[in-house]
Length: 320
Image (tube, helix red, strand yellow):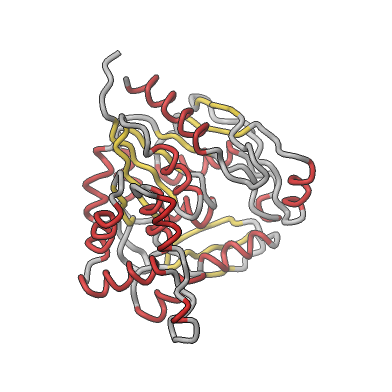
């Protein structure tokens, strides 16, 4: 076997994608690229978008921090909220969100701002916004009602409204730098992350499915540990595979699914939020299922080391 550096794209946002990146960055045989959702409407990112007219920086910041040379120190500094701004118009924001937003305002280019942050942090990889055009995630539910905005879409399905259709408003286009980078990936990793607000919106961007269809190697989905509220009751890893495949227009090659179960007390706590362990389901023929104990703590987060080892095993077997 001849080892070579693999150029891998990781698609998602929220807390799931940074966890994956943080586990993979120590592998010297991987060149990492994060393609990040840009449609956050909540929290600090949403306020900065509304107040300054900048793109929501939160998900990009988290991915850059995960790839930083000194992740722990970078997180401690850039995720802290600045006390001297507590009563100001832009009070309550993290230092990192404000820094990225100010760099965008100064340069006039969000991608240049992200590259500047990467240089400051010594990141072991690239971070690409999927689009630099502003849009909101919109959803239609089974009862025919509709809603707009990431926070509102999540709230609707958590409260029991199953999503039947998802779209972006207005229509936006894949950033040209990401459009050039994605077809050169040796493989694409999708997830983990909130299915309807972190993962699916990326592939609703005009041009994104076409770029991903050109990836030379496997498309790998990292299934979530839990469903996300009443509206996803009965949702399985197989459902995620099918919906992503239909949206991208290409079969998913591998799905990674957790089979570990935490303590009963932990499961009961999440059941109180109407969340339950994600089952495998009836995965389409031709899609390889890789299972393992990826939930090792009391919080629903993939074990970074175990997930990174599983991803490397799949990539090495299929590409080397």
